[in-house]
Length: 144
Image 1 (cartoon, one colour):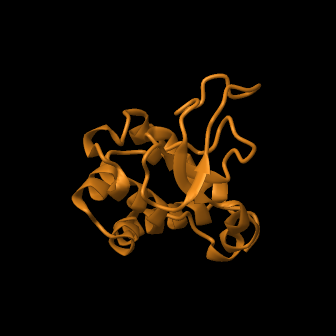
Image 2 (cartoon, helix red, strand yellow):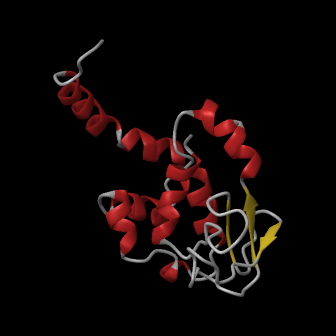
């Protein structure tokens, strides 16, 4: 349920989300990644002609089992994967690409990750905006 949204932010980074493999959007990694021990090699295929890190061995996490269990019980996107992948990136200055801000909505999340902000504090920084959204949203709900 929430595996895809958790991986969506990686589209604005150097991290492969498994396009060009038999597990698209079920694994994450990049060449030389020290997080996890799952390996995959993105290849050109229909729907993924030029996947990130094409023909390069990537190391990372196999999230296939997570998809079937944890994502349904967590009920929120997993930010820890983003924090871990950033921490493992050898060239921090190249980890994020400009598209990241479009995915995240602002530069705030990128700045928090770079600053080493922990997941709990990042989520806490969203509270005020989420409260405003909930108040606005409540006026438009048809059912309680």
